[in-house]
Image (cartoon, rainbow, N blue to C red; front, side, top):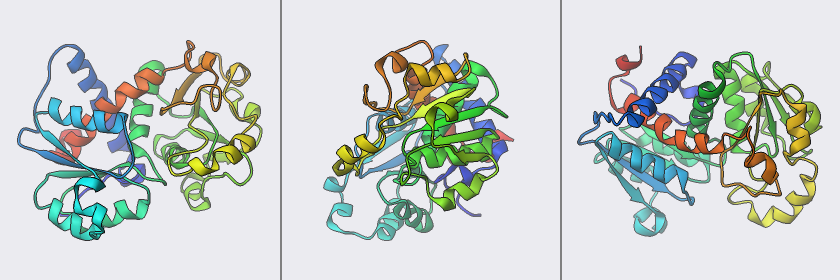
Length: 306
């Protein structure tokens, strides 16, 4: 039987993704009621971090604890990865000891190689190309506040980065329309666009992209690894800030999301991120619940979700 991995949203069917969100909402309600189930007793998640993290580490580590399991933090400084051990060798060794592996790294190819040689499920905690776990949390947050996202319009305003790429995948899997507003030269890769071409369009003007949108989303203009481009990006993205005018163009009930950390005064104004339409704190919390549902699915029988 082929090992199930979660490297992009396209690895799961739309039906499975919907079931995961439903389970995440249920797990959140159970936690609020003080009813924690511990189905992952004796299970261990190995967490490889080559990029800094707050929400990813907290949510996976706490999630495993709440589910009755354990998580081990592995950094390049503390392992042979940092001394040049091939990622396939790491996969072979690690997957003989742990029950699942989460990797947060730069090159998406590294996650793919890890999955190819691993005996256990591999989860993409973030690569330069995709951030699927964040999209599980985003979809959960939208559904909790507004119900189904099917047929809705999402405006992505900013860099065509890993978050944008995962929103493109989400447009296909969750059946919504996606308007992407970005400067020339900062578009998402064409091969990613092609995965949901009928649901995605690039609109240069952010006000036009946001018109009547049900959800407005952004991210930092210079992602991790792009810090040297900070000044050039500040100039290129001038006019792409999500502010009062952008939100006024969207539907009156539109929500605002940001995966965090945010640079107030750059990609988003303080009045928006701290305003009544912002759900960024629910979004951040939902990383925990969505990933608990994901961990359950990957480590327990898939029959639970069908």
